[in-house]
Length: 412
Image (cartoon, rainbow, N blue to C red; front, side, top):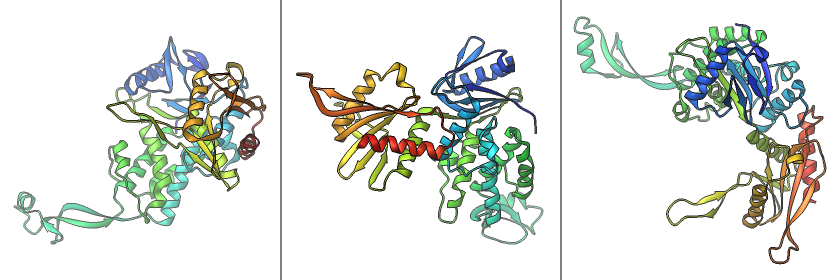
């Protein structure tokens, strides 16, 4: 296992040549992969890169760039690393269990270690339970007749050895797509793992997991995977394998600056985190729904355009709409486009109230009402800004409970 240095930056921060030992070869690798893969995670600047709203891990050759979220002026990396790990686990982006070591959530490069450790735990579980077998059609030169004889190949291959027969037959085997995908991801781990404590588990699994033929993996590979009742327990392992394999870009030309990108859009992650918090902790009488769509415009020729709020909370026949933004609005304020959008939610979802929830240092809800276009009197359409404090969050569950309390007070 090679030693790798970790560079820690925050979202929207720039990283230039020479800073934190960021080398020219690593910059060239990021420039190359940005051009080839159209990475959305960062933009190119003079002698460096500028990160966007994506957070997570970029592994470039022997260096790891850890991009952390930041919604205030606090630059405590341990604090924001813990926030990010907690959000990923609680939001259900992947069904990740708690790490075996409490230190995992606060040490550098925790995100990559989190996925590697969980993937190893899933493979160990599958081996302990027993790997599933499937029927598979195969062809081969056999010593006895089995299945259907392929006469053309039989004549071609057995002109001399007439004691053999070339046939197509069905076998019940562990060599199928599920295990081929998992084995390919397992073979990748020694190249990306940075945790010495996990190295021994990786080597043990490489010895105990049955060797599989190498396959090419793409989005279509995973789209063709169908799980049934006997293989449903493979889902988490396949989800992590998909994340690792589809975000790994080997440097074919030089072989030294491979890139692994495990990145998350903070706006998406914040939306999922708020939804999961309300779904789990809000009173059962409140029905929490995510991403409900309604059509609101259709051209004469073409498809309808839909509108989709992040979260709709139903209390009986009364609805409340919550939109989320991972952006501190205390200084910038809410934009006109956001206000327009929230007004449309009032109209199309018949909402009693609408609100925009964002991270903040403040805890004071700003309430407001839309005005009548004729006499500027307040309408019965309330739009609020709900700030969620991120300044002292050390426990994800406490943070989730605070979000629920904010919403309960706002609903009234």
